[in-house]
Image (cartoon, rainbow, N blue to C red; front, top):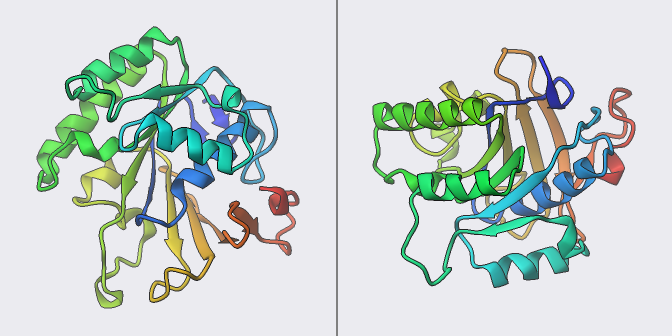
Length: 235
């Protein structure tokens, strides 16, 4: 099996990045993908960069450019396809996917991925939609990381297994490969910069879990005593 990140993200697969609004998913992805595109290790594992694309399906091009600039990332380092507030008729996922194919990108990060199914869609609908996406991914030799929200949950309602704490029905977790879950360390105080990042692979291996911080506006993973991840203070 080939990977875009060794052991964690198989090629030609659908992966998810989930988390509540404001948890820092976009920052984590932009900073991680720019490091990955330079061939630097991420999450403690070797990178295998390919042509990539950032698709914004939930914020305008101006908002994306401001976010990129605020992170000190050069705009040329983030290949970008606007798919929200473009002034054109609202595009369904198939039209956007065709635009992605036109760019010849092999790895795609798609913000607002969950917008293309109804909020109240049941498991069978999401199951069928994810199957369509997966077929297109494999047919066109693409690796896709879709960004979705995490539903609000009271502590007593929180699923003990992180993979199940994704937006809506369990189909999201069942029919995708690796899941990255970004959560607040202190859910009662959104201003607390501490985060927890889970990386859950589909084969049932032990999830990776990192303490993290957004204290300086950048995502920092903090596992200094873990010998398997010597470079995380740079992420």
